[in-house]
Amino acid sequence: MGRPTTEELKLALAEAGRMREQGEDPHHLAKCLLNHDYRLKLHEQLHQQVERYLHSGQSSTEHSKLTRLLEKIDSEERHPGLGSH
Image (tube, rainbow, N blue to C red):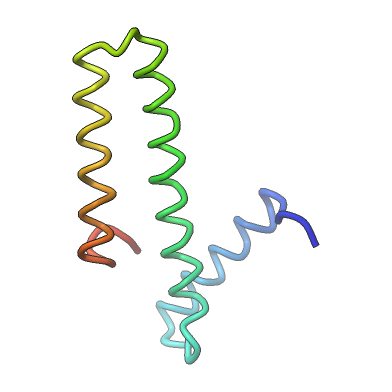
């Protein structure tokens, strides 16, 4: 099975967006895909920010950025859909 290619993911997300706009998502598959893609991007940003924080010698600036990103992720978990598609 494997991971989707970049092109496959791009096409699937475009179709999911179209389905949502057209109201053609009776089983919420498009909604779930779009939400998971949004959340995955947040977690990828978190990973990158943690790496920057650690490589910076744990600077206060990078710590502040890391804290803000964690708050954004926590907010999304408490209020799903507010910042997503």
